[in-house]
Length: 439
Image (cartoon, rainbow, N blue to C red; front, side, top):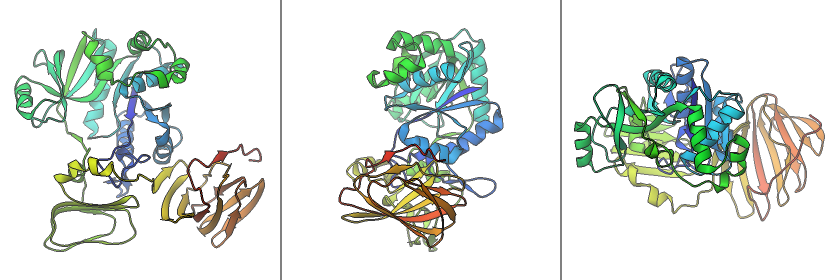
């Protein structure tokens, strides 16, 4: 199975855990059978590998998410990086060209596209496999997955099949109707449009050439910024007369708000939280190293992270986006390919950060023009390289780098450091990468 997972957007509906770097799919909130926490993207990737160990998985994403993907899934996962965000048609176009020109997938092979963050069980991925098999054999150019509705929702688009068979020609599409209209559509056999579809690779490449004028991966990559911002539905699906839909009746949830996300939690809290006996239907997600005490709360969600603190009625939590849009979105926590960092304090001319490097990983060799840095090793062992000179470091060691110094750190074990940045102009853009010719 060739599968493209769409992992775009930054999302504000799950603030304060989601930010411009960590979208909802990277929040570790689900427990595995071993009791470890995993994110949506880890859960989906694991489920795909369980159903089809040989699946070719490609994640279409923005540059800001690459480090988090490598952190959570490892360095071997296929990633197609969008130079900028342009909506789902350009993202699918680039990923399909990547499959053909970089990964060697033939134009006759089927490709399945789905979002990276559905909350589903393994039968969903069995259905995706069947969807791809149908796309390989069908005369239809597109085969969509239609989710059997559980209620008349105004949040989703609807696919209306021509008949009641599990695989049917599509009669029409209806975009996010009123609940009353949705009930009428469901009575006609309508299915939710979950953004899942399959096709033969050559079909989409030809549509890409017709729509954009580009015929290969290199051309699309170079001209990506000029592509129209348009969804795959509007750009391709609604103009294609030869479409089938395959129904799916298994469990499917869109965990796009705190209200729906907490429904999938297997307990009332993640992180330190205490509830008195008067609390009812309260969930806490706490990433801070301090306890959260809840007393007499009902139908509430509490979320605490370095980005901020949310205390909300569960139903009202769906409406936080306009308020969050007014906040200063400084990234206070992020997962990188080498580990993670958490901002502890921001002063007028300083910033203090806790840095954790995973064993065997390293930062890029880099320098800063406008700030000095001081590293204090808290635990673990590793090596620093300062202007080409390597030195062993361990807990208690302090390393000072003046502005302009070329530096990096390599973790031999898990390495934790407190990094203090000093300067009048501290910015994420003040970073120059260098080639570590000595490694």
